Length: 119
Image (cartoon, rainbow, N blue to C red; front, side, top):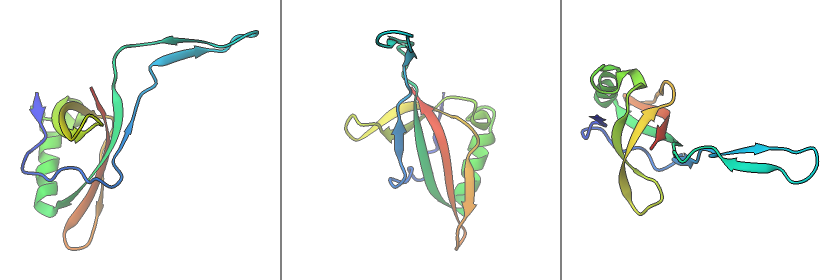
């Protein structure tokens, strides 16, 4: 399994959000209380990440993201250390939910954001 490059900075703390996936299915009844059941035991929370990269770091990120043996354009799982509410940084398996977005900032810096699912 690929690993997020250690030469790149960690995700920014501002804007970081963990969005738990709903694991239940709810059926509204014509009469009486709705019925709710657990759909799955799998927990693939969605996490919003953003990074600030220098020009060379952004080039490294794009190479890693596109590499078929590494991230495979976002299709492959990779390991990254993230805070997930269990005390400090934890190594988790993550996969991109869609393409990343990159905005050019002044002085050859890039703001890159992406949503990933973690397990």
